[in-house]
Length: 75
Image (cartoon, rainbow, N blue to C red; front, side, top):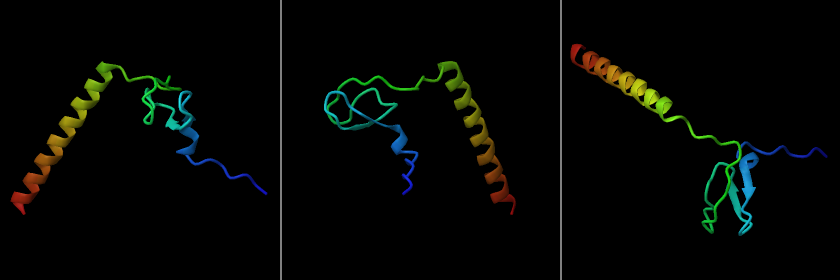
């Protein structure tokens, strides 16, 4: 019999060393017992990159909303 491959979600589950319950590999705190966890393969995004992404998304949404309003009032 073939072994079932883990789903994308199951690949990211780790056991809490304090309580033994499941937690995701990017969590810094166990959701069950609130023990500290060291995240695997997780590095927070640089704050300057985050600011640039927010700025670009804001501009895109404003432009999309303006186009929506123009189309709504012209037709």
